[in-house]
Length: 131
Image (cartoon, rainbow, N blue to C red; front, side):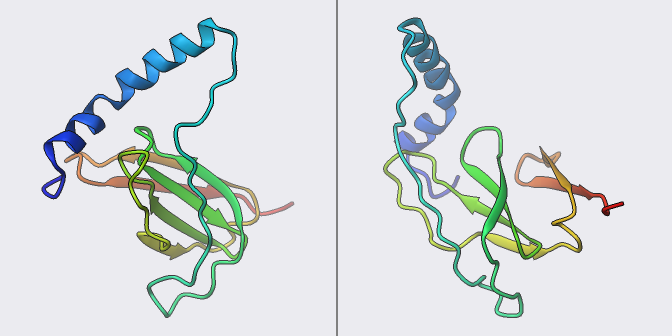
């Protein structure tokens, strides 16, 4: 947040109000919502060269607030992406963080919540083995 301008801070703090207003406006017209921005993520090798290539996406979870996205890949990797805080913000072609998780492909669930200080997230993944 230290690097954000006043305009970017205002945009970020009012996003849920603008989103709600947009939902009510467009749902009242019985029209489907049109996107404000489209983000295309392509998997690249992780910044940590000791991790293998991630493979392809097989799941995702948008963190409440809409700025961060958690993805899972078919090679047992969970990645954190920064989608930006304005529709026209350029995003990195690299995930912010990547971690390998054993047996992610055998049925899993991602649970996420903000950390107690509000500066991070806590990610819990549970998986089950096939019977």
